[in-house]
Length: 128
Image (tube, rainbow, N blue to C red; front, top):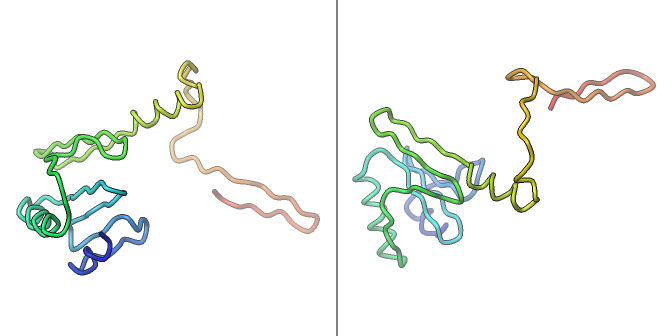
């Protein structure tokens, strides 16, 4: 798949080598799952045709779930909402933490944590 997207002049983004982009069309590839994101449906259709000429594919239409994330689209407001709630609940069950009580922390929004390392010569502060 990577070689094929390269041949169509898609480039891998720096943050994740499974995400490709060409202008403002994004393609994510994870094992045998592909997600195509773009507001222009004709560009998406064009890419789907090219992919289906080289790979066996099924068209699942609008994506509701991807990699255990719930995807909600609001086309009028141009919003795409991703929720990892399903994944989070699964992780809680895997570690037998599904019955723990939620606690609101007293930490303020945008609080930076710092690690203080004391040495004999000086005091160094490293931000996380």
